[in-house]
Amino acid sequence: MSTDVYQPCPCGSGRKWKFCCGERAAHFGSLSEAELASGAAAFPLDRCLINPPWQEEGVAGVAVVRRMPGSKYLAGAFLVDVFCLGVKDAIVRERLTRRETRNFLGGLPWPLREIGYEDARSVVLGAVEYARGLGFEPHADWAAAGALLEHGRAFGRKFAFGQNGRPFYVQGPFDDAAGVMARLSPLIEAGEADFLGLAGALGTGDDFEERVDEISGLIEDDFLEEAREAAEALAGEFPERPEPLYLLGTCLALDDEEEQAVGCLERSIVLGPTPEAYYNLASAHRSLLDIEACVACLGKVVELDGKRGEYGRRAARELDRLRRALRKSSGVSLGRYLGLKRRFDEAFGDLTSGRFGEAARGFGEVLEVFPDHVQAHGNLGIVRAALGDREEAIRHLDRAIALDPGYRPAIENRRKILALGPDERIETAAIAEVDFYRDRALGAGR
Image 1 (cartoon, helix red, strand yellow):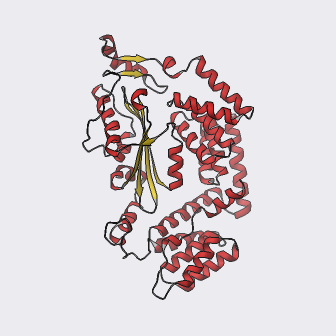
Image 2 (cartoon, one colour):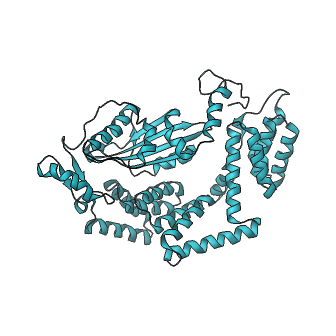
Image 3 (tube, helix red, strand yellow):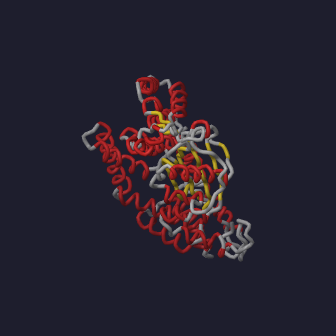
């Protein structure tokens, strides 16, 4: 897309970018996560997915992805009990990159395939309607997350719910089983509903525990391939249990597949947060050079385990080491460093959305503290070119190249700016990827 705001919008609407996606980008960039989720229907649909055997198994895993301005995505996942309880869990993630969206979907504990949008709505909204008829309300997060499926709009009633036309309650590990059974008991006594208790349904007896222990032993003995296969099988059988996903995420992290590990460990934490899961998630984020996420996870470890717990002690030591290292290398505190990283990300978002004045201020704030920040100089060069100040643009790009002669985006952007005619503007497609250094470092370490 050209940075000329009066060019035709690439979405195909026929309107100018300024009055189409540019206007929407500026509006949505100021919204909170809750506001974005509640207004999800404003974003065009990218895809819908579902686990194929949901009708037989009674549990539907539904994922919905919508496209946001600025090459970002809004993704949601719903755990739906189609036999009885309706929506049991709902997750929404905003402003994801394409890679983060792929990792989010890959971390879900179900094999997924494409499903039509209206069919997906029929599955989820129909299950909610069926459960409400039995007296069960959806998960608390459904109120906001349901906007991804336009829960306020009528849907086609295409599918049947219950098992063989009657409620069938399969107890989950985090259910209010007593409350569910109190509502279902009259139907069960009348022979109009069925149920399956926790041990029989989810293998929480000896067999399940033995399989978890076996996989843990395989991981300890470094038989990662065997452990991974066993964990995947266990996760497929028991999608509501956190242990299989924790073990699978651990295998993936140890096998240098950190991006997939993050998705599995995050899903495990949603089902059952533990210090161990947060600690391994912190390690995966650290390997991916995502210091902000790593610090947040280490903080959760200390919060859950305390500074005297085994994992809490480890996390506290790692946080202290990180603070000392940052102070020594950059002279700023950990909080200040993370604040500046967020400011850089905000400025980059402003740049890709065409808000060049805001982007210039953001990159300038970063350079006030870190005058040798290569990517801030490189991106500020793009901003200055977009604002028509070619001389200042070249100055910042030259500074970026002087600091790092191998910084390819600055080299290529400098060449493109010099090749522009007097009235031409640089295209946003020339903007350096924000993950350049991360990708280079990860590539060197693999």
